[in-house]
Length: 510
Image (cartoon, rainbow, N blue to C red; front, side, top):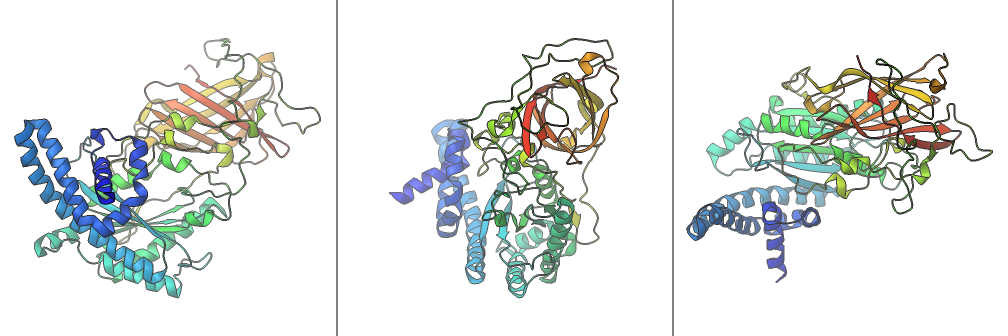
């Protein structure tokens, strides 16, 4: 009975169209590896039958179900053999070397317009760095050298047992090695160190007989956390090496694009300090300034909002500029939960939707720095069809509005159409008491921005590079359909305390 339930559940994961919820799909993730290793052949034969029959019935009724089931069984059994054999090898190495290894299959979405990538696009393997590298070094330890050599020898073999298919597979296949770190130290140092470590692993893959032209490496540093960096007992999970085995170069490009600015990495911040944020059940949103009341000063000046009284308690340290916000520990940041994840071409099976996860605000984060995907053969970046096209309305425009009577400007807002990447870094400016028509000089604050792209929105996260600046950071959710901010929050410091207020800039008219 238990095996029957597992088979039905896994079939549900492969047939999301049949009505399985995202919660049901997510609950299957932890058991997928065990099923693959122990029952991979039988399970996926069954999945193929169920899937093929369902698709056939939808097209041609009962006759279609029989034919579809037969085709699905053949495909499912073949996939099951490949999956089971790979996972068994990884499980064996993990036990021999006392490694923590997790895997996830990359499956091309049925709705994706991709012709050159097979349905079974690849396998992602995460190896936790438990002594693989010495602290601060890109050289493998003795244990690390032995473990990676075993992994390299495994990857040097084709998955297919058919000689002709195996030769084609090895020729087209690409391997991507990604180094990850925790958030201790600077983001620049972590990125460079993780890149060198990824290259070290890539060289061992090459020594095992894999052509250098088939191997790529990347240093993601601390930009893609999978655990809480502020907790010393969990941040070690972020120190890991990721090996992604991909069917061909187009699958490699898809993987690289899907990971750049992926909203799932917002679940945890890249700050080692405990965030000063309330839990969701006890927190409130930052108070907007009386429903912002727009007053147009002139055709060329940005709109202003009606000021509100200061929320600072008596005898508390005063901020450099009083934006009349509230303590950040009474605020629950949930903006990204409204951002629908962008379709990457891969199924979202095994990956929680942003709305299912708690998120960290910019106050609990730091600027993130991920390197290019580089070829091991010659060090050149992975070729992409990059363009300089901008998202409509985000082609280096000035965005501004007042907060408690102070004008806050962020410019240029420069977001490319491809992966919503930042083209030019912004500068923040603050003019105190702008609503009183004063001629105060603008405070200029250098900044760094990261973006996270959803289907219809982009989270634009800005950090001031000067820790003593009047603005610490801001989170802005931009609409991709029209140049508007749908949600916005500005964080600032008063002594050692963090405060937050609503900030909804509008584009300045030309």
